[in-house]
Image (cartoon, rainbow over all chains, first blue to last red; front, side):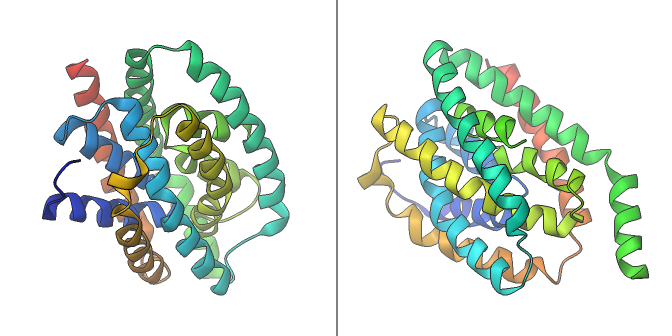
Length: 132
Length: 109
């Protein structure tokens, strides 16, 4: 990431747009860094975590104003999630970088397939919303 | 119930949100709410993951600081169009992109 060019800037903005919608913008930035810029996987992941902080803070403030956040559920998931982070940290020390890259690729494929074929469910829910 | 979200978030440095969406839907949230709340769930997880990465020296803060304002700018755009947009088309498009990227990544390994 020595010289920042227009494509770097566009990649960050695009990732933030996708990321702020909860669609996995992080994967866009990591892919850009690893596949286009040749950044090592773990370093790309670190940059992505940093990147996501202002993106998420901004989005969360806006969603709070829009009345979309459900704090009752959020608290419970966050506590579990923090436990998961500590667990993941222990795993991270044990796993080779290559295995993490493979895991990342596998995760993308599985998440992509699930998202692609979840059509029925989301259509039903959207219809239910309209019916309210 | 958030445990797998945290594990994925730190191991992959991303992806916690994608995983949080279906879990939130199971809690009774609709698609849009689930996506918005997923961002809120992974914000603290990302913060802790980032601190742990920084300690492991996977992060070079100074040379990447330019990312921060652009990230906030992109989020304003995203969160503004979010309420007007039917996210279904975008999700499908993005799903195809993820599959393609995953395959390409494995190919290069």
